[in-house]
Length: 110
Image 1: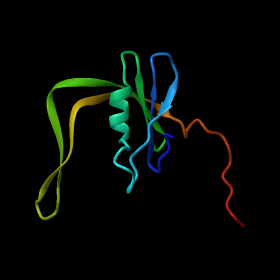
Image 2: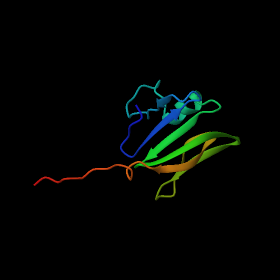
Image 3: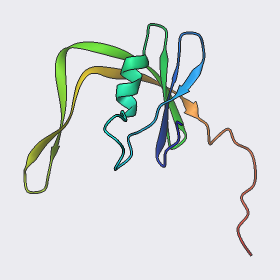
């Protein structure tokens, strides 16, 4: 589904239905897709991508670019490696923090 240790990604389609996006797991078959690839394929006008990063929720839309963008990782040894290539980017707006809205009391073991 859309769960993760640090964050979750899901898409709300134009009809209001939520779809979980999954990340590719290590050792997964080559047919598995990263959530960003899934989102790009499922995205249509009126859809909203939702990112939940440690309780901070962002809604955004995919925006196509007229150029190709690369994410480059540079190691301490100054070796550069292209880690991803994109032709879309996500424009996000902060919606709020879901953890701040929770009520309850945390009790520790005694």
